[in-house]
Image (tube, rainbow, N blue to C red; front, side, top):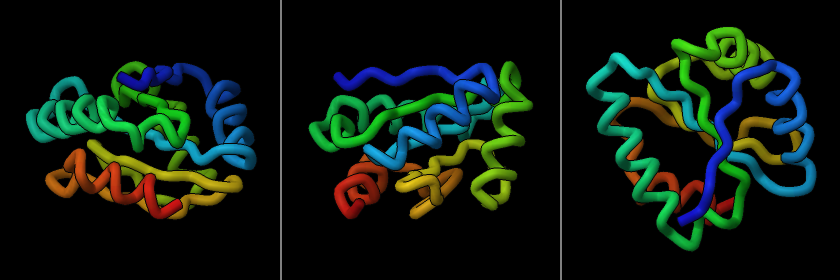
Length: 115
């Protein structure tokens, strides 16, 4: 299983986005109080068990505990906030994103494989 890092500060977010210039980064925004987000997080966990997940750095943003990080991620990448949401970043730019019921492990693997 590939590890992920939980982001809790905007400085760590800035470092993660900067690192996407060397290796793509996948951000997963998660809400602790949303049933759809709980299901999507299960899909994220299944994706993390795949070989594709090792091709990128994987980050988790829990919107209730890292609201500032979530808002900054939306602002910097010009991707409207949703939760749950996955955003793939390469060279500092969002190259793919999706949300809610579209967040399936196969969709995450496909997005990562294309970049």
